[in-house]
Length: 489
Image 1 (cartoon, helix red, strand yellow):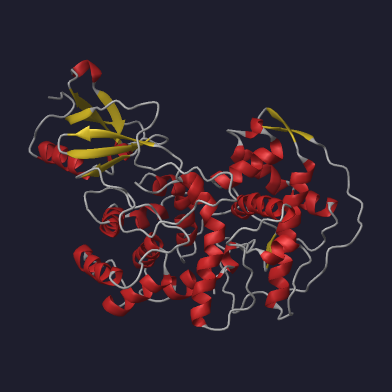
Image 2 (tube, helix red, strand yellow):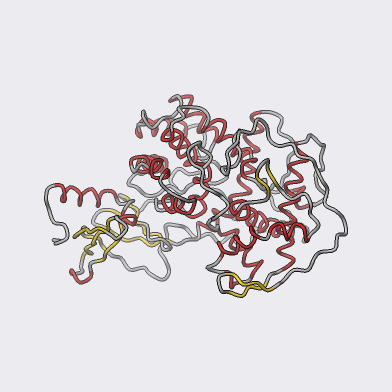
């Protein structure tokens, strides 16, 4: 098994650490409630802060006791005992271990092929689907990848079984195919043809690598970081997870609970504060056995972002427990007895962890713009352009999670395909007029809109056209034939 990406030593088994119980009745040290982050004055909600560090410590104690073979109950906390929470460290979760053992470690070990397998697996994120692909096609490789052949296999699988996990999935972008799984396969093909594995080798940080992944259609903030963290477990990638992390909706929500609304826009810096002061907070609470892994003490930025989301769920579940209402998904299972139960356990473990993030990420609205005989969906927050042949739902063939819950105050999901309330104007893209180099060596293109003259042409960077391959191909064909460039047409 692989350890976290910091040093990547090989773990022959998961750590079986000595268990030290939390001291009782320890007097808390004084904490400065007012802090300054990025020239902003923030007031700390001490109860929320203490809860965060308590939940991390107690959840890792549960892991330690369970791994040591001690019988349940592993905690006196009813919320943690009766509900499923992921481990403090992603590397310890069974889903992550499956990716390491069955996806990364099995098959050709060159960088391109290992990245291809991880990306393929994460598109569907279902163990049974991966194993079916392996059974029908052998170990998947980029060298032998044929989109149509893979599509036929998945089509056959759909006749008898779901192909997507019920925990979470990457929404299928509209890339011109009627079936969601074909759009996913095309997305994978585009990313591989763009040589994403090689491009990742030239990125200097997790932040730079994240920017590359998140530029692709369907790859929202949460899904991008999840894919990247799995890619980071491959042997040739080693981005530090102790310098930066993007904030998902769940973690942002708990940061607002911690620091108030003034934290908006400086969430990354707020996580850095929690990272830099973690020893102080554990010690202040009398927690002398804080979470740790061999040769990796404490928690990273990535671990903290994850813990903030878990704590957001902890507070909600605690509220339901106190009112006598229990979430339907709150089922705490003991040790897994066999391989089939392990698969179910992985799904449940991931579902609890990810549902909140996906549900909130799905609230990003889209607006639809018409182009000649296609649809262009532009995500309002990032303005990514996605080509389709018809205004089909991006969730074709996906086992859509029923995220609505009578106990959930936040379940007001907005369909990603509905128009934005603040902009229902239709624009028609005519063609690319010209291109030019940018200062950083990239390209940007001038877009002509139907019904508008040259004075309304708009320059867009290449990344915003990456999911519109037909427009780019048409333009590049013109350029190869010696057609217009900077002069335009």
